[in-house]
Length: 134
Image (cartoon, rainbow, N blue to C red; front, side, top):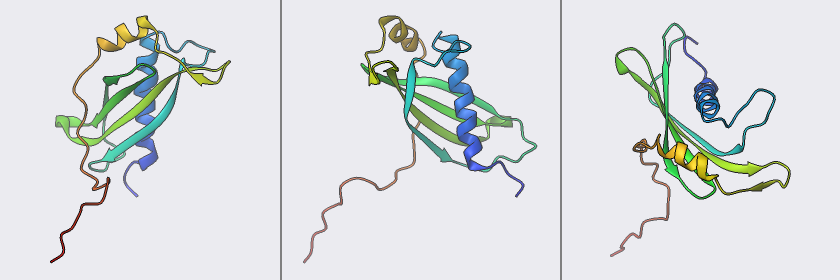
């Protein structure tokens, strides 16, 4: 094939997310993270060739009461953009199996990492447009 499989892009995003979560104290060896993934989106821009070196950037683009969004860029040499993405994390209590409020400490840490959200291509989704008939 000569290029990286599309599922690998999501793995790259996961690696960046786990490293960020570790730096925020959300993931410790042998323990589950304090969140679950509610959604993941990846928009492919161009194929990654197997021999290319890539960089994944991750930042916070939204903070809610129980969830937050992480945005990603996957790029290569000379800032060649391969993909952009977003995941929504939900603060989660595994004992009660419910979403919980984001702790004040985590909100403060996340707030330090807020940047503008990535811009996805328009998909044309949404309510149908009204068409005037003559």
